[in-house]
Image (cartoon, rainbow, N blue to C red):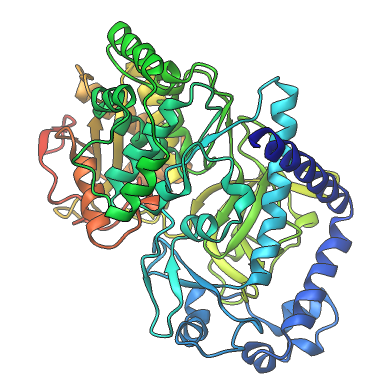
Length: 560
């Protein structure tokens, strides 16, 4: 059955990829057709009538009629939709609401309809086609996948519409066909308790010696999966040997019954894993599944910082980025293993790009995909079947190349994800580059880091907050701090300019082991979904890390 499903998926996905590439060759006509169809289909909605979008005939008219707007402009409409009011942004009934992580402010409500899901599916299918091609070229077989997400909604609106992160809604609304690729019963992802869900998903995955794929929404979640595997190794192996399930698991009686019905002992596999644990001292994915074909997780942005740790846990397993997506829609399609750049998802959205010299303009002028320049950075603007028009998410992308008239773009950071002691605007991309170089230079591994600002000086000091990975030491913290300052000046020209006579010296804070785990727990307790949890690597919130204990604070000479 699994082989039949995978074969069918491969055929359909490869066809979708071919269609996508054909449309990409005609990107101008494809984008114009997409926009015209969107406006025609949605012209009688409340938003469509307000802006008279049915009168729009050309791309230029569209850009003249509708302003570039952030989510706040759409919030009153989505609130009405959440209350059950029909025909507001979309003419179709809302079947679900995607909840954003709130990284750009308060949580956002993104309406999902059957039609909007179909257009998202186009990009997902194309990405799967690129993945199938990459796997074939490298001789890596397809197979079962481990992805311990939850399908439980976070709650319901007053009109009864379920809401959850986009990863949850995708899994929950996916059809039976796609569920067959998971290495555990669907009941496993219906478990509410995170620790229990990870345990059960790992338990079924460990039984499968031929697991081929590990997936995670973000790289940090893949590392957390490894933590769960190591922490529960002995008990997982014991359950594999006996065919039982640990008594401490927080399972509803009905779920436990269904899972136990599908669970049985695998003593030979347990013996093998026990030997692995004994010989290596740790149970890691690269030992448990030495024939793992590839991983799927988000690329671009700050992912490379976490990818530096992947070889320890996953060996040289290649990484595919899937789609570049957000709660509002799919923005890009990845094309190969171990690459960060994506094609715009031209079948799923209409795209515009705001040049840097327009970022502070109230009504910015935009460029179309075929008008951008390689090496330049832009803010991405899109319109799609979720009912958003000229929507400025705040994502900053860099153009990596052109394929014909179509750009290849890399997500760098989100607007607002910057730090300024003066006016230098240090981004997550800048500090991630710096930390990667520091780890290599000092042969040290960081668990995580976040750069904040001090509150005892004007302009403030940069506070370099780091947590060392287990077993790591930093023998020359003062030299590490000096090197941080030097490298950041190399990778960020405006920081270098401001450091000459405005920004004071940075300070290093080494945090207690487990600090970021405690911060993660605190954020989840305050309502952030674990699947959407992205630690900011820069924050202007000076209280963000206040409750984390500092083991050592280091200052440079002359910093009194």
